[in-house]
Image 1 (cartoon, rainbow, N blue to C red):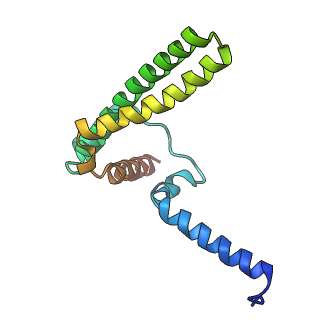
Image 2 (cartoon, helix red, strand yellow):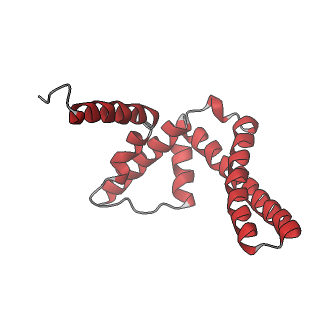
Image 3 (cartoon, rainbow, N blue to C red):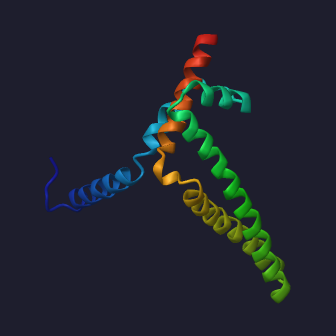
Length: 148
């Protein structure tokens, strides 16, 4: 055991607290780790595979379908945000690098606002979309293991 008055002990104690704090905040990533950290990656899936899961699972299927519809809100917001901010910047500054940065930032902000709109419009706050996505990945994993 290290001496409690040593700088190493203080640093380790501080680091452990910092790590634990962020592990709690990003605990949802552990749901995906078993799908990401595989020896052999999962094969890609198609739209028909997703539709088959939606028809197969009456609980998580509709939640997954709604979550996939929310992506369209994000994409629309991203396009509107990117084009409008870049156009505004180009109109008033004629700066290529400024317009490029505005394009990127507007895309990110638009994506965020689009998802907020989808959250309220589609009432995603009532659904557990993380569980639906995890169930889909489990279903896809099982389906591909049976094929092998």
